[in-house]
Length: 260
Image (cartoon, rainbow, N blue to C red):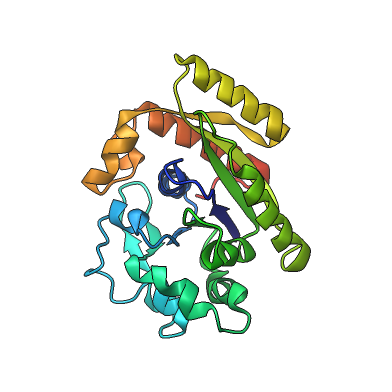
């Protein structure tokens, strides 16, 4: 099982879009996939039409110890490969206060996911746009992390702070945590500033930047409104092509064979 956090403290850079569509691409290849909605906004859950009223339990109840993680999973039946979602809602915003006095609070998600280690090939965690206890839990529970960076002005602004938090996690909690890769998102090759930003990102992170670039694509924006990922909504779109390529790169990094 490979657990990967999709993280960046900036909002609107494509964390949820990447978690959903990378997970869908892996599921289509036959891998067993779990998507963890670890953002109180619940956008990942909403993408698949899982509304607060639909989920009896969420990740928040798991963190509090009120329910078992196996009782919280929601299966999404997709045409080419089902996947599971661990849903979230606005109640998760209370996690910072709820967990602040709990001993070992940074290990709660990791201990919960251990119960699923024989059930999935990939667990992708959609992190919130912050560097608090939720992101700390996600990184501690992960083998590695992916940083989506929008191809726009100030893309690298604040990245140093994220790397400092990761450094603390590696030094004090989880020495095996690795940077899986940096993903350039929302890229428009027609715009000079996008090309310049992409060049800056590659200069900063070097060979950790994926060859795959997620191009700006209206279908990626439209798909969630139909409660679908890009492969179920527009499988021939540029967005589907890009996330298919990203999944192939990720699989190659881990040396896996096709999941079927």
